[in-house]
Amino acid sequence: MDKIDSILKIIDRYDHYIEVANNKANYLLAFVISVSVGIAALLGYSDILKFDLNSPITNILKVICILVYIINLLLVMQILLDVHKIIFPNTSSPSTSVKSNVYFGDVASLNHTEYAESMKKISCDSFLEDLSFQANALAKIVEEKFKYQKHAMKIASQQYILSSLFVSVLCGIVKALS
Image 1 (cartoon, rainbow, N blue to C red):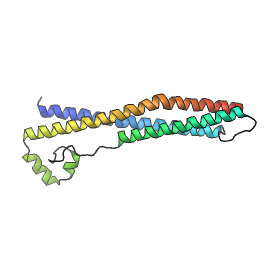
Image 2: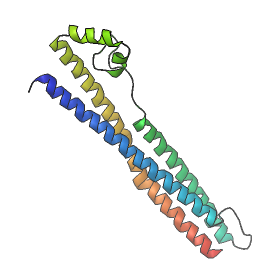
Image 3: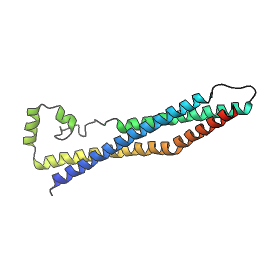
Image 4: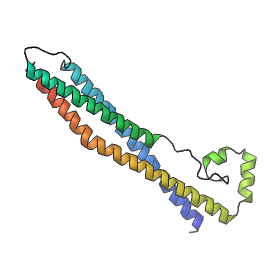
């Protein structure tokens, strides 16, 4: 197998990693939104904003519940920022000095005749270098997406789920005491 085929397989693998990261981000987004809507419905059901002067303990629990829900919303916003960084495409050109025959932005800037001419003129070594440059750029994109994915999953699995459970339990207690 020659070097060009090897780099093409590497690029294909990086493209697959990017697709996987985007899919996981979409599932995480759906999960976070559905849990947030469920908690909001639970808060509405438990009359969390109606305070009773005869029951100070219930009022304290309601305030705690509201504060935890606000923290929960802040965590949702952080997850949404991370998910946005994962899903939003990186369209920066890997090279500024020379037009690439591989990078979609550079290829799209040419008409079909110019691109065909460019492909005819390029040497095998230059094409290999262009592919190597593209593989390196994709590797950096994958690394960045995985970094944000790891952060979003950490927030979702630790703080977000725990605070969601806490709000749910508090709402149940408040409803029982009311």
